Length: 150
Image (tube, rainbow, N blue to C red):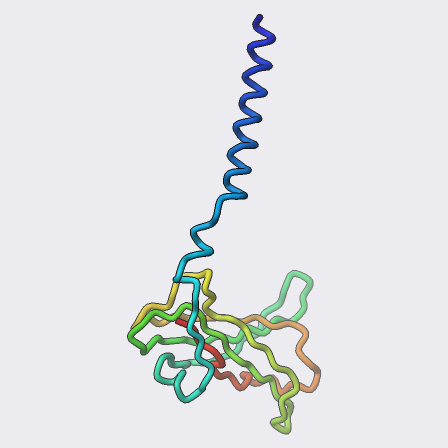
């Protein structure tokens, strides 16, 4: 009788776990219907200046564990708008010695999956780059805010 009882408990436990997983996987997600996921994006540079300020850009050099150079571009973003920003994307143009763009990169500094940048808040960001083109002039890339979302 003891063997049958433990078998029944094991089968019931497995059925319960499988049932909970099916309910979790098949249940309509509240996140899909959430209006917070809708994002108003702005990509006009003149309008963006009313929402966000970019300052203190700098570049530093580091090495990874196999002694390759890593360039760390850092700066500060300040939300000067009256609403929280949920997405911020930059555009970085690395230039050659003649000032021509030879490589462009668009990192997201604030993503909608992260905590929003509240009004008046300032955040420091870092962007790491390896294997930049040989003709790069080793200066801070031309950086601008390309897109914001609230």
